[in-house]
Image (cartoon, rainbow, N blue to C red; front, side, top):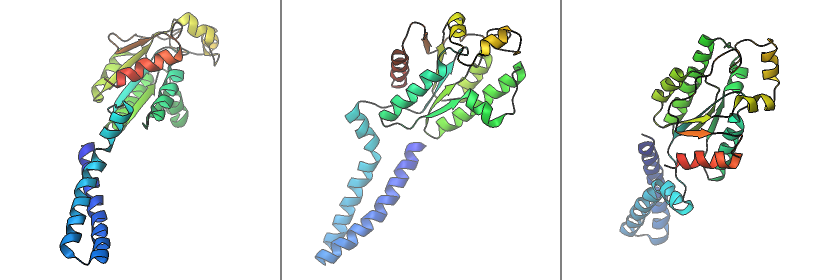
Length: 232
């Protein structure tokens, strides 16, 4: 669908441009046949040049990816968002225009969901639906979300055409040691209820496309693994 729209846009623009080329040619040559020929050749060549630009660019740079949803799931403090942001930056440097959907940022913006099981599931499905819509518009979407329920992740997978599940499998002890927001400390003290990994369950993916452990892998290794999978 996206390619058809691109082709129609290319044809429309080139027809308009070729009319201008024809008029300029006629002003210089005064010959109707020659001017029409120049306009026609200009139109045909540039239509296919415009349409094939992405393919040519991919051939020159060696980098081509299809729209996809990269879904990073794991405990708080596992490194999901750090990896997601690095993937975004690397893709931008390669001429892509990826979109990041961060669960915490979306919660802060909407402020309508709680942390009980039902609210979490609804929130996760909403984020997944947003990701699938963006993928349908031809985007590469990077999602960073704890998303503790495997059944919900499978529902989100079903919404997407190309779904890459990334399990950031960092040991909870490492996550607790990092604890950048002090959330584990509060959860262990009973100040936070329904905290994943402490007072609420996390169900690991059964068959993710990628498994990462930020305790043993650096960010570059994690990012490279995701981008290489995107290129397949």
